[in-house]
Length: 81
Image (cartoon, rainbow, N blue to C red; front, side):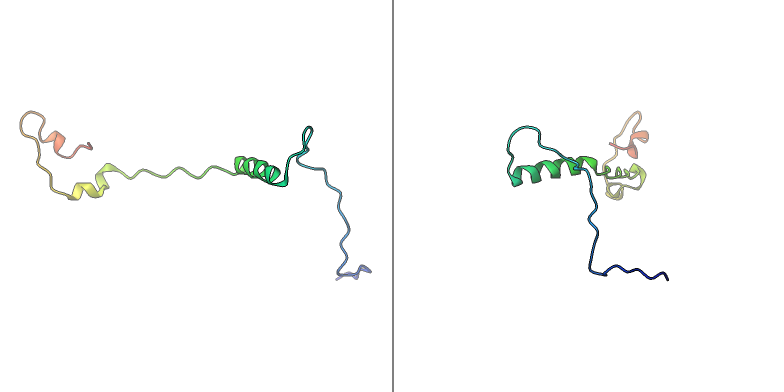
């Protein structure tokens, strides 16, 4: 391991460019905080879309229903509604 002559508690300042600059007006700290919150929320990735379960495995298929009589009755007995 290489030895350093720096004090472990000292940190060199790093110069960074500001990400946000007020051009006009005098906003309060609360207004700036609200703006930063909105901008940060826009940068977040969207939540993954929830997968829709198949109608064949839906719990409502376990309940008894009155099946329609007549033409097409058996076909509509298990189709999703």
